[in-house]
Image (cartoon, rainbow, N blue to C red; front, side, top):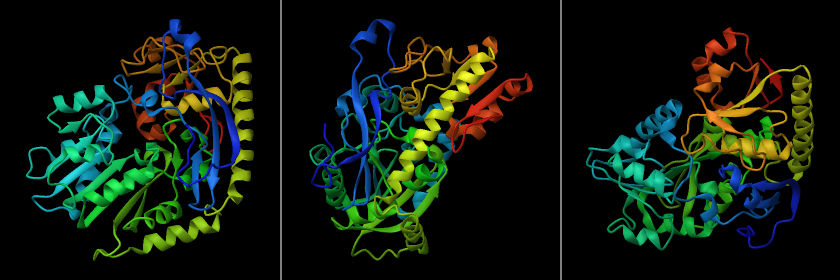
Length: 403
């Protein structure tokens, strides 16, 4: 499907080639019917918006067997607990909260057994069902102008609408922002965290580009989009999640909430590095191509030295790395993971076997390619024995490094 938020087709400046569904982990018998699309990226000058040229059907990406649970990461549990604590400054004892893409309810669980009325919209049935089992009000539908009608007494009465790594997944931003407009109370806030274009550009972390991430936002882009509606940015808070994210805080234009100094500071920085125009795209493309060449060369070099190489964590981001760099089971023997829905299957497109993470220590690899590089501190602490036993980690952002 073509991405047309800016009102016209965007001319792509770069292609990452044929790409499968990032979370489309599959069995061997499914190889011959695997879905691929062209992963191309473009830039809208009108909205300063970095976006995919086209994207697969959302039903192919978010479904009854979506293989990601937020609660599988201790780091994310802690992050959402802090996120919830921070958000309480916008709430009253009887406030209403809506979370977009609420997954297994890790964020909303922090408001359980309180007087706050909270609901989450989660389109993937398995994680929505898991949230319900935990006592979370999870609606197994997309957040849009049609489905918000399911919530009575929330229109113009919601003090907090929030999300994390979800707004960039929504093709129809017009419908999303219209829905927010309809729900937000007079002094309510729309808060969302997304992978930050500035961090992707600085680190050259192009693995953030895949089917679910239809957009990569900057503060300038969000400011321009919000201006089309009854909204404005009042705060910007950088986050460490996903290798560099930004928390955007929006209020109604006529609310009494004051804008922080961070807003002008970050927007000025973005203009300095040309995120408001297409100039940065040429350098970004060059850096991606250089990284691709160097990563594959490093793996070939290690393999020629008879090193046993595995991948650590079958992340959605690794799908872009493996397919763009043309890395398969000839270079990486297997990938370990803890998610039951992935174990025993193969990585999308590249078809590297995924094994239970319990085998990570048993198989004793020489090199582990850290696909979950954004959780490096948590992982290195957890896997101290691997390093102590002589194993080495291969990371690739912001530069390729064996440590």
